[in-house]
Amino acid sequence: MRIRRAGAASLLVALGLTACGDEVVGPGEGETFEIVFDGLARVPAAQGTFTVWVHDGVDTVAVGTLAPGTDAEDVGPFTFTLPLAGARGVFLSVEPAADPSPGPSASVVLKGAFDGRSATLVGEGALTDGRPLQTDPGAHSLFTTSNNSQGYPSAENAGLWLFTLTPSRNVHGTREVKVTPLEPGWTYEGWLVWQGTPKVWISYGKFRPDETSLLTSRDDTGTGPFAGPEDFRNAGVEDVPGEEWTTDVVARELGIELPGGFDLPLEVDAVDDAGDALWHHVISIEPAFDLVEGPVAGAPFVVRPYENAIGAGGPGVPRTILLARPLPNGIVRPVG
Image (tube, rainbow, N blue to C red):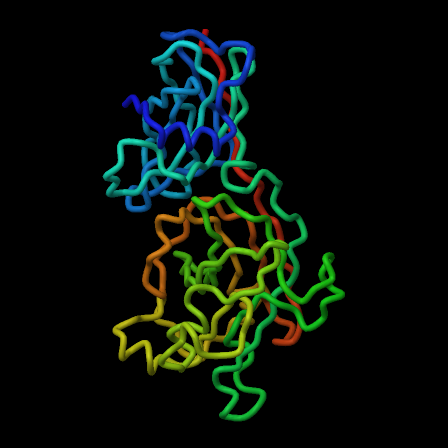
């Protein structure tokens, strides 16, 4: 697939992969290359298709797709033959499952420029705005407000919100969580994850940081369909991402079921007989073309950098969000 048009050129400018001045020309047409990925899981077919693209600063050409699979499988080496002369760079995008466009989406996972006959593909500048992920984003709390009319405390362990009552605990010194801004093709999404077999993923919404990298606005599902208010997207006083799982009255009216069929209110701080957390908190990075989803998303995308066990300790105790996995990367190198 060869794309030669302004739209493709604009994307290359955004990727920082365009030709410039008297730079060394990349490898020649017809050469065979291998990409070795690190930390990249296979994407299920229902979530899209990984496509590899090369460009010379003018033309952008798809050189193949990566086989779909389960997110428990890592992507193996990928081999392709360079279809154009003077290649400048390589990038990997995820394309929507029903993709009407012949060109690459804005959801670029990895990118890199040729340096001689090899290239290093990275997520910084593809997923993020060029900066690495925050290593100390902050802490979250267990908290509920939607059922305070029933008296206080009111099942405080049935809600999870991205703030802490003790701002000094966060390295950046504010109550809110701090994350690296993403490129327009991406958004963050938060998850409550049951640690059984199989795991159960419950989304609490999608969100992006403000201009200072802080999460100072609610996510796209507000307090959530299991919080009680009929207008759950806008009700409540919360100004950070999070959700509450206290009642299914509104959810039943909307025909929404809680994944896993758990009893409400949830006990997010539950532990097993050995004291290990039964629930984990995960923040994933999701393609922006999936922004329009129902209030209970089915499964996360394969880029899931943040995870922490919730565990016992009481609702008022902040839980530190951990950078559990680096962004994926890859090496492009000649074969033979």
